[in-house]
Image 1 (cartoon, rainbow, N blue to C red):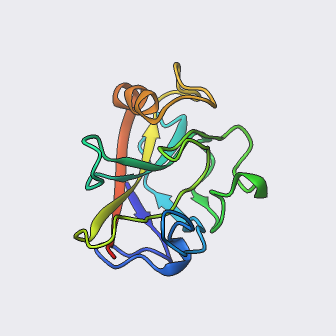
Image 2: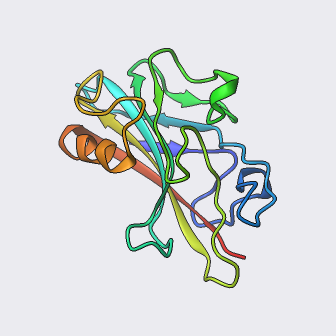
Length: 162
């Protein structure tokens, strides 16, 4: 699979537009546009996550969790992570993040910390709906389902530090 974004390039610094607007950060908190291709045969849905493995939590930080994206979808528009805008395809669920709410929450690492890695991953999934995850599922439960139902995945890693 291949994943691309006009806003986030592999290994590049993430722009102010995508940064969180709290915790001392003053970004616009706009999710990046994403496009993917070359999903394997048998793909019945997609999921998208944004994860910071460098967060000082012992378990990383989930910034965005979207699942049950219809298999006919090959992109998400910029800003789709704003639940109020209703830009997700019908049936897609924006699950809870580690901020405690659904939708996109941009990067905002602690001041003075090294640049964190923000891994945006699209998953090709072998079921139309994840069996255990619903709208109030914690990110770890979504990850559990994805562990057993992923056919292929692709990742872009952006960086940000302050």
